[in-house]
Length: 159
View 1 (cartoon, rainbow, N blue to C red):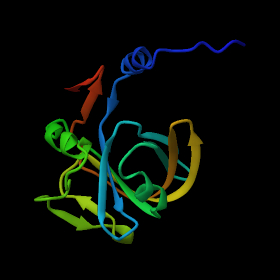
View 2 (view 1 turned 90 degrees about the vertical axis):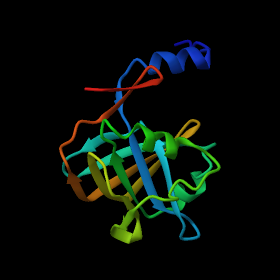
View 3 (view 1 turned 60 degrees about the vertical axis):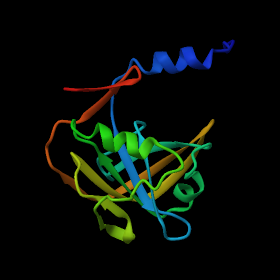
View 4 (view 1 turned 90 degrees about the horizontal axis):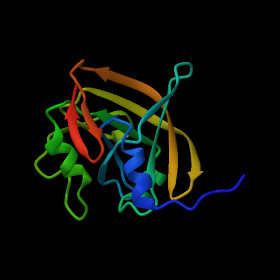
């Protein structure tokens, strides 16, 4: 089978036709600092055992912190949290400045507002091209039942 050479921007736009939810992933960094980022690469894997996954780009400024983390929290954002998504998508800023958080399992910072939150322990890490795929075992979750923030073709939406 011949592999075609794709234009990266065209491929990104085509992949963007799949509407996804928006998450903020948080953890404790290598030096014990709070780290977090926006991601839409979240997916369920298994109900028994309870496993979920997300992926992080190797060029992410918090890549080393998440790869070294033993645990993390995945916050599925509510439809009114676009500003929070944008905050955690920025680089070079203290994403937690002025935010109220609580301490979750293994000291992981938990956001105070979200649609759903999964607290996970790292189960596996897999190479995935320019990303690493992180599979986590869900240890605890909280579902507030609110409508999710949606991302589609480079923009936000809601159900």
